[in-house]
Image (cartoon, rainbow over all chains, first blue to last red; front, top):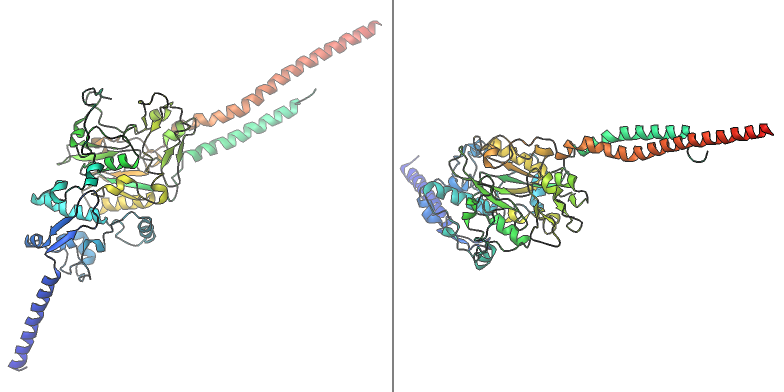
Length: 171
Length: 317
């Protein structure tokens, strides 16, 4: 192999890494709008860049789907070398309606499936965010992340007054 | 003699006895071994996931058109409410078919929350105790009731091992029993999860077929060593309930009766109740027979006497 060939190979390798990191940066969003389930609360403008800067492994949130390996010992047994999947958004696997009749019947039929207990999208968001926020002393109250909508105010009867407090008999 | 002959009466009562003794125990056994409808639905409650937000209470209130609460549903001060000298935490009543209570168990470094509502037993004690048959266990798994036939006797409130049915004491003219019906009318029978499950932000409530939830519950225990007590409450308790629970601490530390037994409540009374049809079926026939026999004897004796008298009279002639 001549020096020229080595140089070309090196350049190609460098170009590949540069391109792939650029591609990764392009694919990795700065901001993610988590607003597919707005009802009682507004959506969340998730600062993805800020959270990736915290230095956590991608798999801390994305399990094995980013192709960067996984550290959870329950997942490693099958997913140690899993490839990156086409779309890594939460909603690709975590359903907005996990308890639809369709999904309940599908999971029951698939007797050999290990993942019979995949949480829905709402739970996936809350577990991931609140679980970590508790550990890292991040905000954990509902309205720290998403403001309540007028519909939510009604739902929780935010204007309820305890009229019976004075004469409460105590059951 | 008109009517029943002695031989026919004895034969009939023997046959009746045999039929009742043969049929009785079989029926009673069947009553205590119902394992639930095969595709009955249920809810798996995971106490490690509940954060005590009370959204389920708000959802229930809205879905069931219950009266507005005294305090907003996001007011956590209700967790400090106790009754009966501090021994009793909140329980469901006519205005709230579900309530969440907070516990501070010794074995847990954070408070735990437990949602209370009807557990929808496979063999409900309320149903067994109701003499107007107001209660029904539907094929979807819900224990529902027909308030139109409820006479307000409150037997079900005494019978329920979980102290669930509430009573509309506030209604002077038509007081009836009130409790969680698994959102049967508006949701369950249409294949939808109950409102509390739908709203839960943490999926502390998992809705599914009861048989699948049992599998899921045991899988959670297995895949998270140390997180849960190795017990799925409601899988076997009291003959099985549609709502089942996973807890990180002993169940009595979070307000459960730790050992209600695995027998459905009806098994406590089925032996006695099994004799009721026998008494109802056999006794009238038996005593009617005795009565007729006694009458016949009297009649015969009377006839005999008359004949005798007649003979004697004839003889005199």
